[in-house]
Length: 422
Image 1 (cartoon, rainbow, N blue to C red):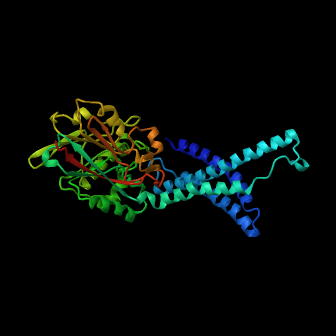
Image 2: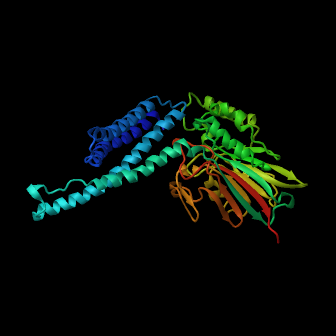
Image 3: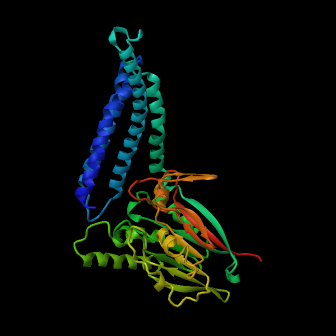
């Protein structure tokens, strides 16, 4: 999207936000109406108004510096996140007040049409009740404090997700074989190296047999990972480190001076995979040997429904024994849905993906899981299975655009392969 397109969208959001200011301001005046402190009556509504308008103005000025050749920086992500926090908080507040005002309007219309005895001196519409403002503040506090938690703590609150998968045809030597998976590092978004390092240390402490990374090393450009190469190169495994590209790795979402410059950026990013100690798989396969037995590891370039479709699965399968135990690295889970899930000929045992981030927002509790991303992706987090062809979707290590995570925490996946006992 061009700069003008971004600004048009942001200006619309800013206009909506400013329209809410008046409504919230008056709601807070109702809340403080019976306070004894005159100063308090002024500070609460005017204080919120000043802070909220300032956030909107800073947001607009911040995006005035947006550079389409670099994309969003952590500064832009913070400005967007603060703006959205206040916008959604105001939306909840206004919604509650509006519902209360609908009730007041109904009473007013009834009084006006029936000349009800309670409509003294033709004041048909009753005053806004303080209770409604109190309820609005209570409900609006949930997104307000929740989003701030997401920004200051949630985005680095790494969680280890463990999954054991059983197979009839897993080679015996690989019974108990472990894989640590990271996905969607999005290095251009990091703003706290010390917190990020805790995630790397947690991943390395799993001491898995194999390490895989399933795409989106950067937001847009190769230089974004350069200051973190020493950090992520600490991830080592006995049987190697392997990686693939995601949709953001191709530099498609920023402007380049030429196609040659864009191609050079991709070549540089591929070199950085080597610098990290990762073997980048580009529509190819290799064998991993243990105890005289082998499994095949395949990696494809990005292939996604509605995104770049560069991955070539048939090419990646070239030379692979049809009976081999196969693990596929493919960034977008829709690739599994389209080309693996119902494909008996490929018979790929396990596909590891990422891409969705779980929308960085949702609810996951025992027996219940929800995220807005589920309306776009059938399989958006965790394990899926179709006739013993498994998919695991990692929720992502990093974050993008919204500088936070709430409910869908950053993930380190540890998968254990087990052979079924017949």
